[in-house]
Length: 293
Length: 303
Image 1 (cartoon, rainbow over the protein chains, first blue to last red):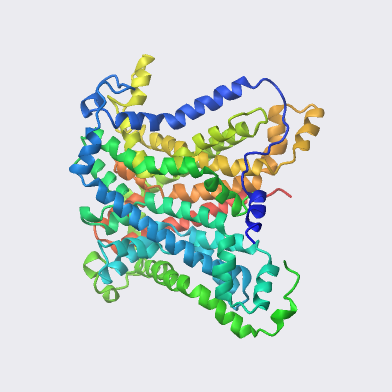
Image 2 (cartoon, rainbow over the protein chains, first blue to last red):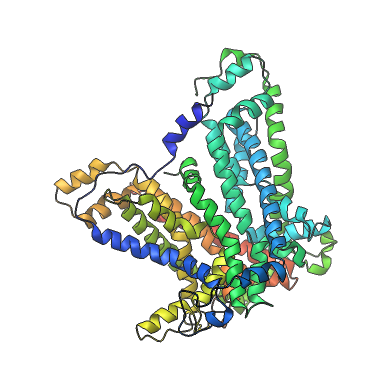
């Protein structure tokens, strides 16, 4: 059964390998343009990493420097000792992990029902869920805050997690992917007397590897980077997530300590960049997988 | 697939299958109703009430004020400024980001390009990063005195302006940052679209003597229409709601020149004016719906 996954996979994934014959030419100018593009896009990251090992004094220097004159790790030790960044990191990780688990499980379950089972109300349900993709976060955050306040969940991990345990994108992605699994496979199991829940957990989910990987990465990333809701719900420092901590320091008490802000930005961005570079196939695969072509 | 339900299924009652299906949907539905559908409905109702932060424990006790919140919002000079800024951000930012994303995609789709994965990963990097952290870095990058941009300009003898502190430049700087951050996402979508265009079309056009630009205008753009539409809609929906960038970089200033609708709504929420906040949010929602509709008209396939 597991041989199915790679076979499905190859048809939709890696959009970069094939290309079409185009007009010739030496094309050196193309590399020049692409190279300038890369410099402009990656340059700020390099400047950020280099800046994080400079002193605030050097960062304020005119003209600005590229390479640090006296490299120091004191910004990072300050983040840990004075600003409790380990705690913010942990909060971000816990929230993102819980949100991701919820989305993978619950969205896959609904995705299976929508793709492979018949029931009244199916079309309307799918349309309503998809419709919420268009609703801006700014519409729901205020009533959500009133709700969470009345559940006494303000400034708790549960308050940060619960509203985002399910989402329309996950349903869409999993429904698309599960729809591609042959019915014959499921029917064979049904003939053998397997129940739908057994089929879902033991046959369908193991075949959904690529889709689950994509959903995991995108959901984790979305949660890791999310800002508005944690800003509203996390009131005390021990509940801050990384983006909230960075934003509040940048606009408040640490505003002038720009070396610390640089190091903080590295802590938020660098883990994501590393994961992205290692797993970049799954990021772009998600776009191909949802059938956007 | 789609060959009809096999014989083994005939015995299973529809009722039983429906119940099983709903049992799969139940956990999602409960969470969805409580944390998504419920709040959307509540927001709509709240926008017609005078709910304030002091009513938070008893949200049902508020008074209905009809369209008053909407009238107040529309008459507020700060709202008008925010709406104008948001319109500029979307009307300039979306085409700019799309043009850059398309240029990158077309460039990477050329057969001669080596290291394609390297370039693609590089262009996509900013997309995966936290907007907040990016905004912090860009705030320093665009600093008037010690910012890297003005440092480089100074090397050419140009005295760079206060990109974020001068009201003439602040919004444009933030648009540039948004385009920088999002073009990689569109590049990936557009690359996928470009690769569905058959290569022989270009060859035939080349034989007929069409130059590079004519081939782009005559083949690429028309065939990319659905992909471009998708990119425009997704980017538009995101841009209408821009918030983190201005929250971190300018706090809406200087002189409200970068105040966005979402930041304006957040401000009102902070002041405790919940009914008012909900009205702004729904105006924003309406703007998104209208923008999406317009884009569908603009990109509709000519028949």
